[in-house]
Image (cartoon, rainbow, N blue to C red; front, side, top):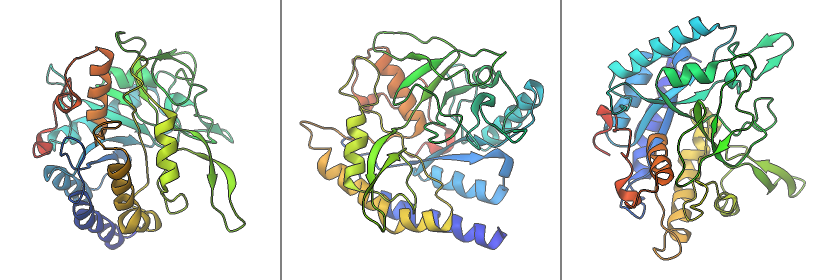
Length: 324
């Protein structure tokens, strides 16, 4: 991809996402903000500065995405530390109470904890990746679901703690479901998005398919998808009244960007606000990955405070996101 094409894509998001988001607000009067999991291995200073500016305006927050392979524990730790230092210096990372940088994570190529091997190649290489993530300040992993990938855990549609086994890959295949009144366990928290059977429209008519919460040109938004995401009911066990919906996209690709910015984001926000924000049966809350983590942890702790007061429960907002 040329620099010119990259600039066009970035500038499109810079201009059009705020135009869309400012038309919408949730039950707390908060506009939707996008969580940008930016790939450190593809770092471009201009792109990153533009994203940081978008976040400074209150339209998002930045977390870490990384594609890597053939790593050792030492080489991967070096990559994490280099990325954290770079992102932290730019002011885009939130802070733990002890002032350490905190960050959410999505593993590139669907290969968390050395879970993907194909034709003699690995797409990670490190069996103790969960431990490294936790030790270097990661607050939660947001990689899943990964439908049709070997990385997909058996435990689906849940928020859970995974315990690392440094002698084996894919230690997160199952874990301890987070619950209200419980406490942290294992090594790292995994926050999953919805994964369920649904109907997909095709040229030959509707057919059964899996919906993994992907927003793309080939998987357009529909009201039925939103209904299914709500009904999937991903929650902190014991609080079914709080449903967490984590979606994902590869939003810079031309076809996907057109689908999202021309129609689907605006339509999805409008639909959610009209049908799931009546103040009686439903209250809608737009959150970033960090804010979702904070609300999850507050729910685990059985905090009596309203959600509007829980967005910064543990992790303080990044310096550049102070306008949100």
